[in-house]
Length: 329
Image (cartoon, rainbow, N blue to C red):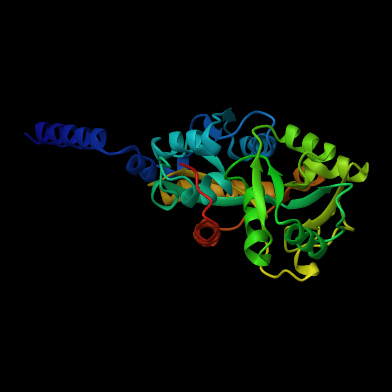
């Protein structure tokens, strides 16, 4: 009788475990995570800044976690396509996304039909890295600093600025400059940033907002002139270029960032293990030496701090987007 009872209880327990969601099961065995390959989705194309960073970090994570970490590119809709895939994935820690200022901050207010809610549908794991944007101008533009550029734009009754696309941190840099100074600036988005750079050098567009690493060679060659670093500190890649704050425009920060997210509902133990792996990567001297020349600054930090950071960043860009009426249908 006792044997039959134990068999019955064991069967019930097995059936109960089979009906539990993956997140609960993972929680009960958090110490064994990971037991299989982890996939990090890059919601942009191969060779993008996000792709470059993620592949370097994934290699370090593989070593740290003792499991293969692969990277898959799922580009489209300003990062929304790949991000939406992860939002709908099983929250077991095996499908993650390297989100960015565009996919996980700007898009929240910019895209009217965004297929996810950043704070509801994702588990923030860690801020990973940031890199500054810069305002560069055609070499013949008669302005050598922000004040002169703003004055020129007002005198002309308007000035166009190029970026790498709608909803990009570059666009937000332009929108923020317009908001802070009243300069009449008009956005010219490019699908290919290479064409945006070429057109600015040729003088078809007078100014360009984009990431520092992509513009360093043209600036040093004299094809473009750098007017301001849109970040709190100067960049070591262009140490002589002053920040916007140094030029008298306070609260003007368009620093781009990248951070690791998983689907909402991930077990705390899994989030903590992934967070610690990012922390290890952020403090790896060889990894930093590899990424620094490309403009990346590794960050790290707690998952709670990252959630607060994302919340604040969403609010910041929502205010700019609402004030400038910059939206994507």
